[in-house]
Image (cartoon, rainbow, N blue to C red; front, top):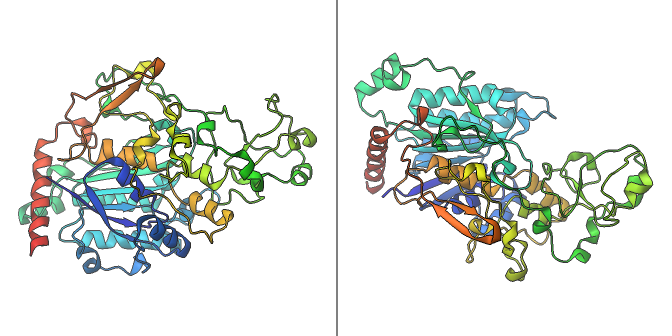
Length: 462
């Protein structure tokens, strides 16, 4: 039985680690790496272990191979690729750690069997991505790429991100296979690979999960729970997050997203959320004059009377599906069943292994939980959350995609929540691995993967 031994690069506050835990796969995160002091302190408080603060661009093959890890989880800096930046791509110094990792990957005798990478939209058109996927193709990985947001998975938040999931199809340890690979005669290279034409999926679920290939799925297959299920119970504790009335009055014709407790969509929370630079996204919650549902932004007085406030760091963390240790679990927003999403009728007869959003599945009663150091101010917590990712999205892509056929991993089951709260579960009949090309059966590749893991186990014992 294969157990995942993961390394977490650019770990931040542990979003990838929490996502790995929520996927349910057997294994552990062996080590994490990050240079941000506040993120590392938060990570240690949450997981009980301080990340390695050594620069990733200084790691050598020997430093990585000593862990004998079979999985890399990566969330490299997004600044080289963000629309608001200079778009320097691989010429940006902040891209060097990722590119350095790729150099080390190519040199490894036993490269990881699984790779998972997250970044911002625009990474898919970058030279860094081009270098990454060409290397993966050269080394014998099969992979899938996508641009997806939490709302695609049933979470009421719009945070569009790029994801790549790769699985090593063969170890290529045999000299003949190596020659075939380099000459282009092997089956991996039997077709011309063009990173510009490879499909990048923008809908979830992917076609591989649909039994009927002629079935056209709705772009939003899951119902979305209302924002109220993610809000703190005691509104009186959030007065510090109220937007100063004078700030609204001084900015005529300023437009931003207004959230209501009944809203089932929220915009992306950036690292600048919570500051008075309210143009930075995330939305503001209306707490007064709730009968007003249409907004005239030219009338600053009427906007100021809405009692607008930022969502608290805890509320943002819930929308990112981080597990939190609530003071009173029975009163937790996530204890409310309506916080779940459900599968639309359209999907009930066509999905194979997709489950709708259920925040309780992302948490373990014993922890670990996201914990911020008390010394961190709200604005610092917002920044850390803005630089993080959505735990549920990571968990589902790992569970249903990357580790789909892994021995010992949970059987893929999706739940249909019907009217009246009745739940039914179904186990898929398809055994194809969703990462494999054209969704073909992958017994041969699985055998090669098992052989690769056997060699890894032998190396570990020696």
